[in-house]
Amino acid sequence: NTQKKIMKLEKAIEEKAKELKEAQDKSEMLTKKQKKMAENLVAAEQLISGLANNKVRWNENRASFAEKNELLVGDCLIAAAFLSYSGAFNFQYRKTMIYDDFCANLRALKVP
Image (cartoon, rainbow, N blue to C red; front, side, top):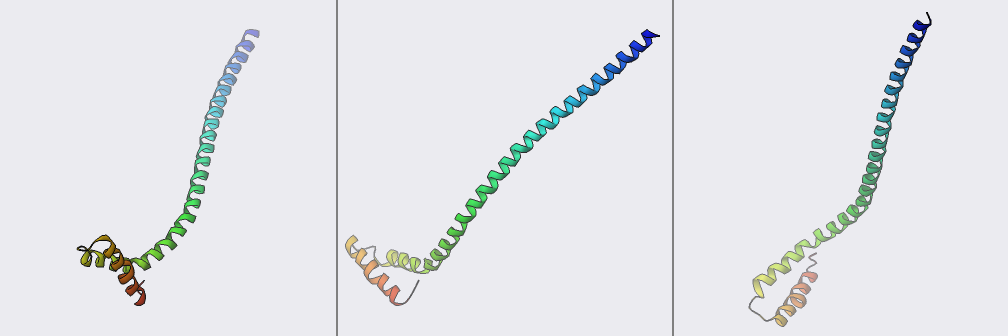
């Protein structure tokens, strides 16, 4: 009779030890998962912060690009005039022709 009680208690102890091991394994898995999620959260916060900083820079660049786009027509005219008309002349004459003559004419005509 006592032997049966001891066997039952040993069996119960084994079952509780097994449950404890399972609970510890689950706890360890959840701890690892929590650590991985915390790392992912930090990475996501860094990404969002970086994108927010880039948004400011992109907005500044957008304004700059709009201004440069407006000046593109005049820049192309100056480049075309330089390539077409000034190749045969020396540096000093080309400089005078482009900056004093062509640019002045474009400003007078209000070409951007």
